[in-house]
Amino acid sequence: MPKSRVGVLISGRGSNMAALLYASRAEDCPYEVVLVAANDPDAPGLALAAAEGVPTFARAHQGLKRAEFDAIIDAELTRAGCDHVALAGYMRLLSPEFVAKWQGRMVNIHPSLLPAHKGLHVHEAVLAAGETVSGCSVHLVTPELDDGPVLGQTRVVVLPGDTPDTLAARILIAEHQLYPRVLAALVQSRTSPDALLARVRQLALALPEAEEKLSHGSLGFFVRGGKFFAYFSYDHHHDGVTGLLVKASGVEEQAQLIENDPGLYYRPAYLGPSGWIGIRLDTGDNDWQHIEDWLTRSWRASAPKRMAMLPF
Ligand code: GAR
Image (cartoon, helix red, strand yellow):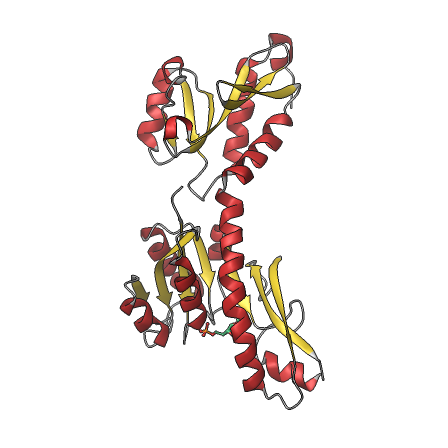
């Protein structure tokens, strides 16, 4: 299984970027850092990333509209083939377009136990409130600042005599542990065969009278009283591919689809000559609506006539 490709956005020191990068060097880490980009060409983290052999990109945001600047960063992420984005001390509000593009695939780390203490001057606020516990959170990025579903948190005790700096330093240790772990889990949940199968199964079995059974070593979905309409293919014939096989209209459409998008579609080994099409599920960037549409179409082509007419 290829590793997910992560772009890390920074504005300064980049110690969380370094934590993500060094964690990614473990063989079993499901992601690699393929780009470090900054909105400040002097961000110290850039020099470290470059010295570690990671491609970098820097552009000062001054003078550019938010959406314009984000489009430049987005183009770099796309050029680097990123499928996930990690914000690591990226001190910029993001445009709605950028957030929408990466929603579900973009995470941020924040040095508080969210939803408490969003924004800046977090540690000052924790101490002023006399709190005895603080910590850090990793969350999916949504349009609201420091908002979005929390994916993981670590609690850090506030010590008597803590200053904002001493508390920040201790929380930073926790951040460096938490961030790689949560990013790895997110990436895995989006690309692991088990997670992909669970999602496909949910969609396939939601179709009328759909059932599943093993067929020639692959899990197939069929319409009761009808034929198979989909197969989940995992490393079949050791091709390393996780994909969904559905019925196209024939080999002509199959060839067209592959020609138009060779990164997404492929010709499956046994069912290829019968006009089935393989859709890769392991790119880290699945369009589930598109997959659901294919399942529905394939279901219609396989269901007994009386059922294929059903409106749903
Ligand atoms: C980290 O403490 C991170 O949690 C915080 O900035 C610091 C960046 O340090 N981020 C935020 O406050 C985001 N709202 P780093 O550059 O060494 O990773």
